Amino acid sequence: MGKQQPVIRFYSGEDIPLELHKARIVQKLNLVPIERRLEALYEGGFNTFRLNTRDIFLDMLTDSGTNAMSDMQLAAMMHADDAYAGSQSFYRFQKAVEDVLKKKYVLPAHQGRAAENILAKAYIRKKGDLIPMNYHFTTALAHITQYGGRIVELLYDEAFRIDSSHPFKGNLHVEKLEQVIRETGVENIPFIRMEASTNLIGGQPFSIQNMREVRKVADAYGLRIVLDASLLGENAYLILQREPEFAGSTMGEVIEIMTGLADIVYFSARKLSSSRGGAICTNNHDIYLELEALVPLFEGFLTYGGISVREIEAMAVGLYETLDETMIRQSPDFIRYLVNSLMAKGVPMVTPPGVLGAHVNAMQLCEHIPQTQYPAGSLGAAFFLISGVRGMERGSISNQRDEEGNETYADMELLRLAVPRRVFTLSQIKYVEDRLVWLNENRRLIGGLKFIYEPPVLRFFMGGLAPVSDWPEKLMAKFRKDFGDSL
Ligand SMILES: *Cc1c(COP(=O)(O)O)cnc(C)c1O
Picture 1 (cartoon, helix red, strand yellow):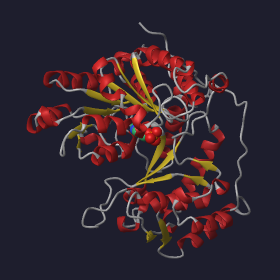
Picture 2: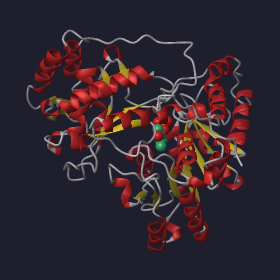
Picture 3: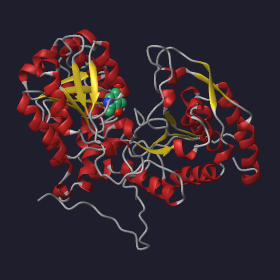
Picture 4: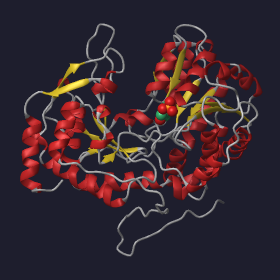
């Protein structure tokens, strides 16, 4: 039996996520007036990626590289060992990988996508090779296709239901996996990819039960499993919460089972353990040798992998901290609190609450805006206007056009409000809730957007849009009427 999980109850019975840390270094925030926020939107082409943080109050764009660092991480960075080769910082990191992820061999990379580049380069041998996976992540897909590979996404139907109570929407569809392997032939499948806390469907976990079944199929056909562990800690935490078999287990026990079921584990340390870096880990010496030569080619020498040794120290300490449930749970607990409060007040959200952020269902909130006018992008711009909070569009603007240049509309139109770990306070989360409830009540004032500058690749980063009418001015006028002289 594992350790009892920490429970802190309030006398009032309210489900309040209590912070188990204190702030000792803080950064000042500004909330500029709504008139300035409107100007900023026009300057930034109504695209939240193009805003300047000078104009932003709460930055909920992403969890990547934005989690709070701990005092122990900052302290470790001070005693880093600057050496091109054989740095002690690397050996401390290697020890952390062995202790926490239970993998003997580790190859550092400058971030998650660099690990994806190395894996795709090493294992996609011919055009048309197929990688089955639960769901893609943007950079994983880009690297696989860059080397001529293809992907197939194998989720259960439940994953695409926005308001669901299914605890493990990230599960890989085992029956379909077996069918795909038989139809495609093992010789055309370099590996099976499983992503912990499936990012693009709302940060939704898979269960250990599911991973065990995928392992069985992989073994039956002699295939390898590659685990994208960027959001491993959060997936493990939700397993403790939602999978009865592990109700009394520790983070370490669950993480060990998850990584033990994979042949290769890679991660973005921008999410997993620190604010920079990435790595590929394995216990298989042959795999290690297959990948080893690619690190000096693309990243840097094997003991620094393209990042500073200071960042390597922070990654090592961060890995140990991943075992601390009180640290990992802070972000998912805040997300659950925010999603549940918003749902109770009628704001349509992706459920069950997942990790990395709260996801607003813009297709429903902005049902009066046709998909041709980008409801999620419009909601993101409108929400910034009335709150100073920056989210990220995860809808059709984030999609690419097809080969003929036609728009491809996304399955879901979501506004993601990322909740980086230990960064925001509960009153800030209450502010987000308050402004979003007001916007939902005034949703008819939100109008659509159109592209005025559309880059050919990854258009969502630098694309410029404009409102289809003077709706932003009307929304601002209503804000002034209801909030008086409030920022
Ligand atoms: C962020 C992320 C990546 C890519 O990592 P970078 O460090 O941004 O290159 C890969 N997979 C998942 C699941 C991620 O969330």
